[in-house]
Image (spheres, rainbow, N blue to C red):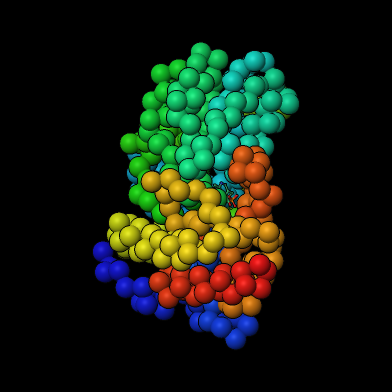
Length: 406
Ligand SMILES: Cc1ncc(COP(=O)(O)O)c(C=O)c1O
């Protein structure tokens, strides 16, 4: 394990030396997408330069070397999530595709009136695919309410899961509130009802140790680009049992066992869900990101990120007209807020003038925005390379913006 030294970490991210509008960049938009360390860029370029070919089908040296690197990346994802085996990891284009694969693959189990339980804090990626099942197969969607402190109403959750529940799909860490949900407990309820338990780990996998076996989930989605890895790559963990029951998503090369003119038989997972040439270099980049990230102790990372978050949150609390969303006891380093009377976009644009990059908008969570009774929010989200100094600069910039906008 490498000792946690934020300056040494920053030195591995060339982009962090940039100046924006005459100020050093303070990149606080990590929940949308994180920057990439040298290790990731070098792994992708190095593979392209020295050993690139298509995977799985070749009998020549380059094809074998690329396949080895690609499968090593799968194995890194499996270890990272504590999956029993690499066969439990399917590469996807990201978390959105992983969740769409869940919905598509499970659709054949849905009869009209069957219930799918979601929550009001889900990202659209974990809502819209289930609306497809509502529209096409008559599924009934149930949404668990979010309480004022940003936690789920667990009493209602417990009562909602019943004999009609076929699928429960819940975000592990909210991308707006930062709330960490008790997935293990919800999974126990889902399993007792005979339902399939899915969790969207897009944010959680970046900020906490994830053990899919301990969580007891059937399926778990994650993404590369928020985990200091490339875009267009993510992964879906699934138990062997659920992967066997799920129908394939895309058809084409690699996912078949045999193709005849009158029928087709499918390969076993993970190949069953990976039709066509996969995102080879992106998968290798994700493997490199995980290997790079794994040199740090997640407890150190969490402590550091939460120190930055708390400094920023406490600074905002001093500003009268600021409203903060999400105060769960168990949460990640995501700070959503609004300045009363000001539009979130205006705040984000003023912060950019001071070199502070944040996101403003609905964060792909329109039902949550309705529950919070806002149109949009500003969101500052912290990552491994952020500093206390950046948190303070963020607070100073918000204060200046408040003077201007107030
Ligand atoms: C909680 C959550 N789920 C899903 C997604 C979608 O992830 P991807 O960009 O990998 O499709 C995001 C991205 O913002 C997210 O925050």
